[in-house]
Image 1 (cartoon, rainbow, N blue to C red):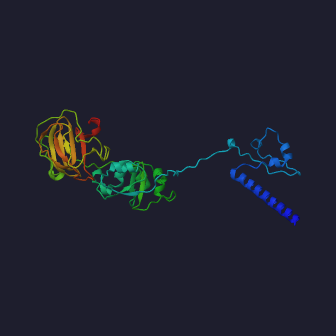
Image 2 (cartoon, rainbow, N blue to C red):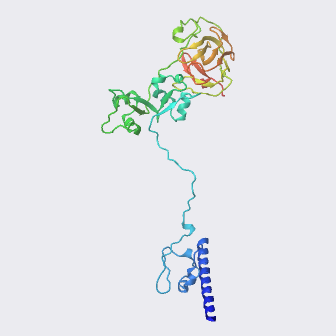
Length: 366
């Protein structure tokens, strides 16, 4: 009986010892501390210099153990030899060139200049790609109109029967290699055949614009036809105020709201709310007042008598009258969105000796 109690106690002690050892091993794994096997093998510990540590062992150095065996080669994981990579919470998407023509629906307040900026192309490129709708006139856009947006700067050409690569390249002053090399065209480099009525991008190509403008109308007898230029055309034969040679902003706002001055838009669109007053930029005589063709809507033209003329378009009402002398800063109309316009603003042009001048050259700094 007593013997059985002793055996039972020894069994419990052995079980507790194994449990303690298992807990010890689990703790070592949990805390990440390496097991100090050297304590278990005095011979191996004696073969390593006192100053050495596991981190000092050379890479791929086997460690001897009793009985002539060896442990697997040790590879150092020292932090000085490791490369740490921090996680990135952002996905970096590589930029790839655009290849396809995209449709775009014109919305409230849109302009060719702003649409081009959205797609990082020139306004000329947008105008050239939509000749069948805009006819080279940026003021012909309207809300709901669908435009074609080319992927790169150049001319989007609709291939016609009889067209050749050489002829199209010459027409737009581009190279055949650029047309063939543009992946979006999907032209077989061996056959070099293009299906009629397909759209072909001519990268870097360009052409002349067809300009839609109200011509320069002098204050003298001009013989202007209202059937051609619109009901606002004045008969002429006027004399009156002359300009100072300096110009002021024709609206209360001094910022753009639409197109800037560029080759397809020979004026600037100035922000002007519906009903805001429009002022004469310099003194002179009114030679056009009323409705104008070409998408200008209600407009006023002032002849300043010194070679300069200024034009104010898209007004809701042109209050100045033909032959009226106006001083600099005089109200000549009310801002609106008549003609081809997607929102209230003022289209402002400056002309000199019949040619166009960028308004930025004569207006004071905003």
